[in-house]
Image: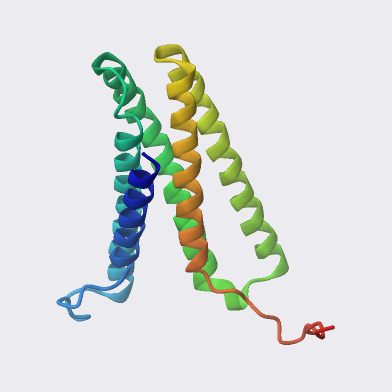
Length: 178
């Protein structure tokens, strides 16, 4: 099952990364740069959601039909809440990437606070749905749900973080190698 999860996640993240690239057949004249960027961000968010759903489908496939029915009913609510957090995380990353060269200390603090709050919301959401699933199905299946969510969240965050520029401060002293 782990191999299926890894392959599915890799495919999902690859799709997400491809979704961020402008379509080669689309000219800049037919859509503004900001319109294309918004479309790419929306595609990225959808690709992440689709990859996550595929991983859950693979990871929960050994449940009984009744358990699967209960799982997918609960997952629908989870997905709505998770997608809202994912959208906020992507929007925050875009805000940072668009302004990283001209960000004040106060703005950096605000961005980091917002990022930390999203991480807390993610963990709180995972625990909320772990509790619901452990009551509706069982603790083992709910634990697998939590593990898959943690895995997909971590992979998606790393993918997103890997795309962000790292600011440098030309006035700061660079530590010498010892």
